[in-house]
Length: 283
Image 1 (cartoon, one colour):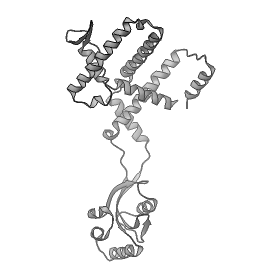
Image 2 (spheres, one colour):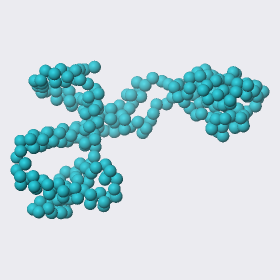
Image 3 (cartoon, rainbow, N blue to C red):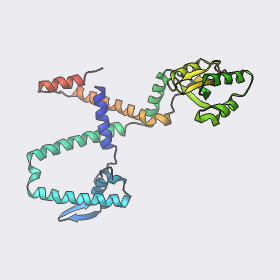
Image 4 (cartoon, rainbow, N blue to C red):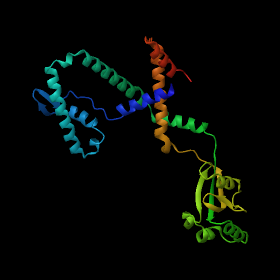
């Protein structure tokens, strides 16, 4: 059920997320072109620009307007011919227009009660709720010296035991590209490094280094732990858009469930009814 609603939500966002410009009725809505007796006003051109093909939408502003106007003129020309042939009264056309009108009403309602209804305060509150539910993760900051052989790694450990500086040895002997930073890997959580390296790094105490070489697919490592701490959650600025999507999803689901509760839904076709009930089962 949730997956179906998320797909619906995504489709709605794609439609109503683009700028929607209402057709104005005032004098400022100038006529920009005429096709026979039909007029193309600025508001209609704005709509045509807003609904350009994504490739054309990358054009410079003036070129976009020309492309949109060209398309609008083509539409007027063939729409006029269709009217002359009486196609506006065709039953199939009327059915399609009803479907499009209901879809657009759905989108307008969605925009008003979901997109426009979500406030920054809603997003912040949901962010704080999600952060509070996150399990605490430990992260470490480590340095390493990478060499090709176990003998080289053992010699480096002996140098460290004799009091030599880890950073200087890393700059001189490490084969890793970060050797110029003294082998500094920054902070990382579990799951970011290969298992052998991770296990050894997280087992160290702050300031300690591995007393035996750590072998991985890359060679032999000597690892030093610089720091250990609880990982900070991502900031609201980093995940704000994802959190807003969560809030909108929940608002959308609330609207749908409320509407379903207030309406009688009857699916006559047995196979369709079963399929609909299956995908809408509550988790």
